Image (cartoon, rainbow over all chains, first blue to last red; front, side, top):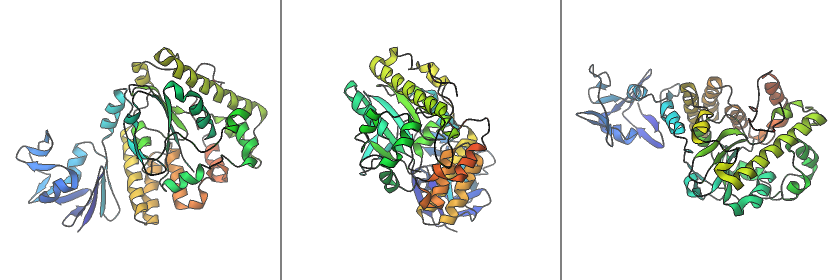
Length: 136
Length: 255
């Protein structure tokens, strides 16, 4: 069964994914495309970070990897639609907290009304009043 | 908001900028429509001036903003800064450090005393609202002028201590919100509502989730929510709890 995987800003269609309850089995070959993580002998790795696979190897089933169990292990909020066809993996709360604990204003990039992208960090060197509002 | 254009014009020469971020999942069109080229409609002048504490000088400068007006369809700024309502403002210094964490940008709960039929405010509530605005704006002027010597700018440790940290539940609610937004983008409005409402249920204190969810269900409500009986009822249901947490600032009128 195919699944749409929304992993942070990465969106991918995984044709051979299999959703079972709160588990999402993804072919090992598609893992990096879906999430940026790669399975290596030392564990699931992204850049320099490697997370060892648990001793009972419960994240693995043949050539499939349980992306949902892995993500929950990392503290990521994992949600999916009722049919298990769309899965979303978000940033862990502790990562959000440690960013704010630094005292630095979290950076972001957003378009203006004409579609031009602005980064908060483009305005370093100025005092900024960041003002959130909405049309509703 | 005309007041920010007026403040921007007044203070920009002192190395100051306003960056507004619109939490609008319906995209730029909704926000653009809300930013009227010539400011709010004249018939709203008495109500807005009274409620927002804008004097004639500020009102006369109402117009299309020249500072950056950014559109945040995914509410990513709300997520990064753990914001649950609008307007919410943050002061960020030249080095990118937060010197006043998210708080209401001068708005208070005075509006709760408004008559839902006539939108008129009792005089004492209107006076308190005007006072809160002017205390906030004067504090902002003081910080822009004096920087870290301003009594309104918190030192790093204090700013961090005053910053609300996102909980695990808040992060989960944001994930549901994003899933709902994904279904909305796909044109599946029923699916969108199902998952957006999970975000609302997990984080009922987020007016951003609640209000965005209702306008996505019924786009005709855009810009109209504040005058809906449902909104007045939801705010009344807060009882003794605040809609806007009071701003902790010397000279602020007591809520």
